[in-house]
Image (cartoon, rainbow, N blue to C red; front, side, top):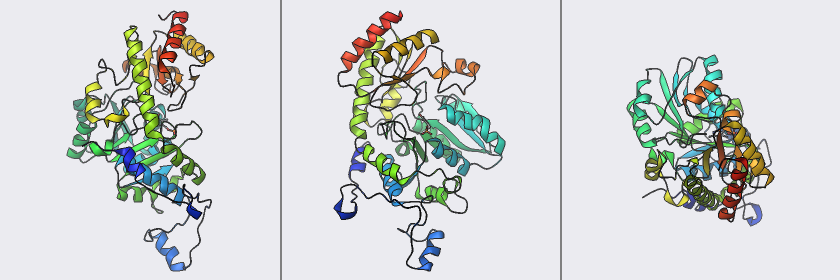
Length: 399
Ligand SMILES: *Cc1c(COP(=O)(O)O)cnc(C)c1O
């Protein structure tokens, strides 16, 4: 039986003051105590249900965290001010100076830059590998290795990580498997497959309205407590806290995630099939031609499909830019980074979101100049969208 993440979210029930159908927003940075003893206990982490200070926790953030923990089938979760505000404290909590990380080489540009340029300043080194080759991962494990890091569906190449195999490898060598599941919420449940920590940028599909940045770490209660510890917790001390107003608004958007993911996936699948049939170099995990298609099917919670992300290689950066400008002019979407919006978003990752990765490395991993990354929107008639896209491609000389 596969996990039913949307049902788990739906089963949680919260009421606001006066019987409000949404939980009340906690509009406070600090909380009063009736007794000084309870304040002391709360500092020590021993007063369940008491709030101290909103950088540590707040009712609104706990509601959202609880819903996301239910979604990811983990004991607990903590929400953060951004996706990077979730990734960086997790790595800093798990690694000391002298430790080693193994990471997929195809990851979000900001995560790559943090591991490559920032962590060495603290004496933490990262080996970047082809995560689809389990032998390649095992080959670089050393006694200093603490973490295996990957994205379920990688950005921007849409490679699929074998989370079950990586989790077994992590277990064998006593490592923590940390998975960024931003591209595949609901569709894949990494903790069910053995991941120790699951991270999302809430900025993308989960919030879905491109009006905020946000993040979450889903993990064991023990690890989440460590992150929030007042003495040595990276979330608490680095201070990437989400604001209560925002967490309340993200929680409301989370309510429609299952409907949105279904539509994003349906539209992306339709476009991928049509574009491939025209002979265009199309990459989408739902296509039979995708190397990770069978693996994705094995891991997925079927009803949510293969997600909203697809890439198209149109041959050159010039053609990619002309096509994107024309599609924006015809209102088929926006030339913008980010993903998970109701409207289709497109960008050329080589010169934008992955520009942190040096050009030679981009080539080596197959990130070509003419690659366009699409986050497919919620268009009501995707066949009509496709016809209009086709016309644009003909005008630009791609077809
Ligand atoms: C956007 C993104 C991030 C970073 O999230 P922010 O909310 O922008 O900090 C991390 N990982 C992936 C896969 C992303 O797409």
